[in-house]
Image (cartoon, rainbow, N blue to C red):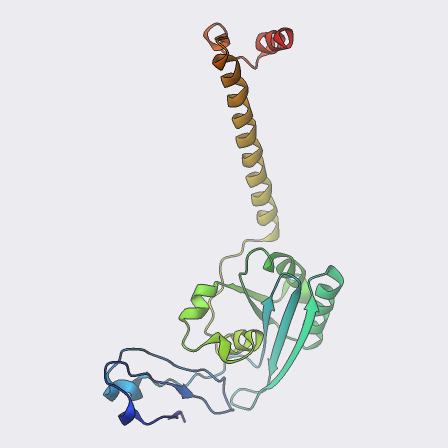
Length: 231
């Protein structure tokens, strides 16, 4: 049962806030709503039920990973275990082995820059691919009722995952990701080559040498021979 921890009558009507905490038998979620009438505060209270018995939340940084695994039967008190790992490959493999040893098939992490990518690639091989990995947009997590700073970040992520409140971003398969990276690199190389060609073409024109007026492709065979003679 959710019970308010404040007296509604002492709050201003224009800036009323509703905050409630759940019992220890379910995920602790803090509900906050601003600018709502005081008589509707009770309607803002929401009890979240656990959907997963085992969940893992990862707080990924540049040089370290904080992992939290919540375990426990549905509707019962949960056990929290938090460990820290570095972002080196041996430690990330140790993280994967720890998740496998805990038989955790559901993992969630924030999409923080590019730091999540190596962690995702290593974890997606766990359980022979039979694992659910969620890369969650940080903006979406801010919209979830409650504050991530109320607990450790990894524990909060694991709590939201356990309650089924997270929606993962679309992450294509590994082969598609590799092809996409290769295609993006190819486009960047073509863009750089085009930029350098434009610079080469503008330089003789700035000196009064109108080579493009006589040759359609200054980078063809004839154009390259003229460039060699001029240089």
